[in-house]
Image (cartoon, rainbow, N blue to C red):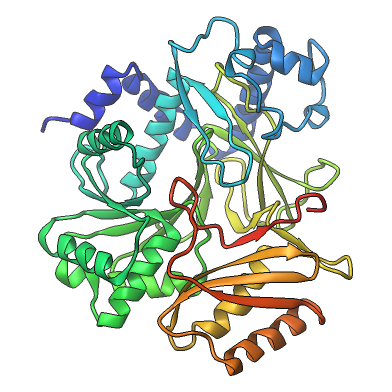
Length: 440
């Protein structure tokens, strides 16, 4: 069979044959030797950048290193300077892969990978999707993503979709009328899998629930659904499984790095230990024991064009107690570090706390489709929501009582019903936003 996807990567200069061979070599390393492999790669990548990258050398302040835990933590603000100032010797903008982060964390920047490193990213994707019988050359993807709205950007993305054997559902308008059109496409096209933003896919599942439709029954070729970029809550996962009739796979990644964790067929969120080293650190940048929450800090073991060494991605997570060097398991992804509400008492609460409290109440009757919570003052929050009918006083009182119970008393909430919610340029929906930048 003609492999258009592989050919496209090859034409763009990504050495896929070599990358796939390297990945298989890493996978074959026995568990008892894997810790040595990680230590070797960590040392190798740091020494490379200390020799060849003036940006990283200046950040470290030394020509060599002795102690991993003394290396600086790299953050997104460090990287908000011209790309050419961050590239390693021997690499220029024509010889590398360049892209831009989505900016969903509020700190967008342009990043680079050398072509072998990016080929390894694709090899890693191909390997993990293969766990579920998905082949990027032949499997047809239903893609729930944003898309550039300007003519050239739109055409470019559509062409990439063609080369990658995927059909894109634009998620900027998710009215019932538009979702009805999505449904018609699933009836007529032989999709193998769904991939895209969690909130949009969940909204489609709620639409199917309302119509009492199981997607697999009208699209029998459908095998699996991969959700990414936004939190997947357990009750939403159950809804997706019921309305789609296929396994739901949770994906966690970052465009500047790689797939970070991918749910394996045993249902565990398996961390990518082949191309990344993932640490969970406390406020003093010290590693915490497995089973304890902390900041997720990641090292790209192969990116020579640009350093991502001890890079704080802006998320909080927990590694499972049973994790090993070869098979680390992400027990929980708690959310972004900047998604924190500072309350009048001085208490800090993750934005997800609000999400859980309100979600459990205002979704009882399925009236509310989506909502976001914005902290506008230290004691004041706006809940913006999309619904068929306005929230009544009884529902509002229930929410206020739950917030007083789970958070603290005396908080002021304003409920704002909207036709649609504001999404990022990429189409992501950020469930909690603090507008009090100076204290968060």
